[in-house]
Length: 190
Picture 1 (spheres, rainbow, N blue to C red):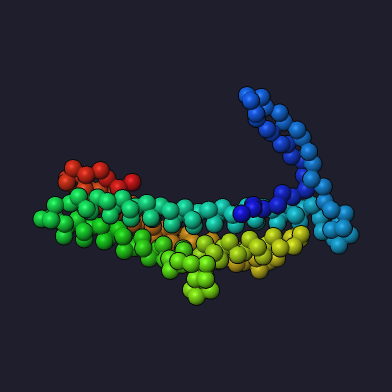
Picture 2 (cartoon, rainbow, N blue to C red):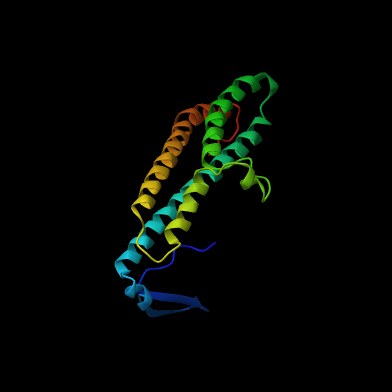
């Protein structure tokens, strides 16, 4: 997957090989055909800036899914080590963590995807919606539309709401679970 196309401007390429580093300056210039159509370097810089923000939101969404899956795997591993007499109490604490995290994961990522056809069968979720916006913004060499900014703001807010739920769960319910795990002489979930 490629990232956002760089806007016109001055840049430097640095290559390190065999312990030696070389830096070469270069410049990306505005295609004269775009200038004839009224597109400016500032328009493309604005497009690049929004594209970077979109890329960062996609990364945030995907990292949240990775973090949730890491917590789930750690919890599953720890729960197998709990003695039967303590299992019910600790499972209740684990469910207080897993239930809200699973809900967040399902809002951020389409958890039903199993094959290449599944995106056609199930609705796309926040990470895909934000990623699709990148395609819209980067489709043409032009300044982003007001609608692109609106959609970015809406999707960012929706993602932030999910990240806040995740943070709340990890900040309140996970410490209670970790205390119980430590009483059982098990490593805390990180």
